[in-house]
Image 1 (tube, rainbow, N blue to C red):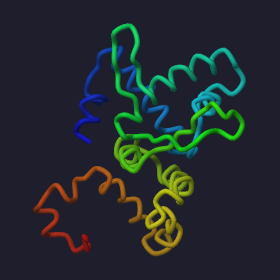
Image 2 (image 1 turned 135 degrees about the vertical axis):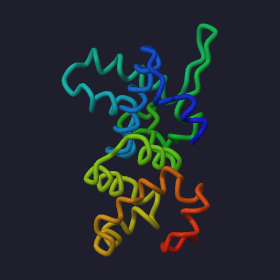
Image 3 (image 1 turned 90 degrees about the vertical axis):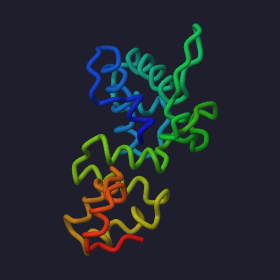
Length: 175
């Protein structure tokens, strides 16, 4: 989390960093809410009817996921930063890779994107096979814990286990 926060610092206000951060957050949001996607599918979500914009956005998303090594510049992609992983090839196009969020990517999205409760439910249904112990039993946990279940955002921030005084005074079982 600290390494990712250095790269996508929320407090930086420079225009180029802000644009890059917004592109990354849009891509992470689409991966969180739609599950496994190709870069073309992610761009098609953003611009469903305009093919020219889809092509340019698809190139940007591919650069964000894979990284960039050209013109003497290097930038890490979301796959290099362990926020996303390759999840096989597309059924439609055998050359296109499919991407999904990694465990760290799921936690980062819960921490940074300020997802609503409904969006967290959608994300849980999309990643039920990836995290079966939590998201696979999401409806069962929701029936027992109700609104308390959405305090998973606190766990995603890592604040509970970082602060020893909170850890000692809480009545929640921490394993």
